[in-house]
Image (cartoon, rainbow, N blue to C red; front, side):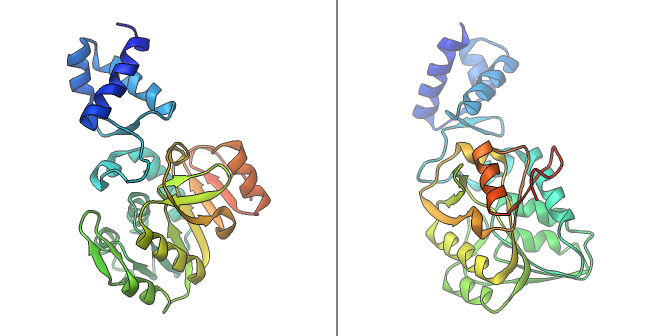
Length: 259
């Protein structure tokens, strides 16, 4: 069976079941796992599927996919982004790390930073940074979102307003090529908007798959940022916006795209 026949059927299966696995599709079509992985990669590149650990799901539209699933999406890219972002964060600085799997990766790369104050509304980030004795960790408080360890609500935003951070590190669920940062949760967006006002510098960490995703809530504009850290060169239109707004753009696979 050719891929032109498999691809539409794969889409039908994932619409029916919510998720497909490499193993399941390999058995269903009677082809190798390598063949299915190529099919899923092609469909993801076309924006028709979102790769997750061991398989794929439909791209997000108005609701996000599960946090544990997101941990496995583009894990290598997130680690690479985190490494270059953490390198840009100096010792002896105050930093806010927001909710997100990529910001968690940044925390892992900050375990050797010295004399740091890290404030976070991400319980996972706090747990990671417990292993850095040279890092004072402050948790904002707020309503706990059990699905991802995030803290949200008025208590969170009130806590943020008590600080002025040297650097605020944020993520997003989707990116428009024209420079809008998008997300799903209004409360989470409210926290991010407070950070924009209380960070001397604001860093966005996002892999380029975010340009293939959609989310309904506008969080910010590229003009609100000071630097963007990604894994590969983003679409030209976005790169040009960064240049026009004097936003530094860094890619893990190349030298800075713009300064």
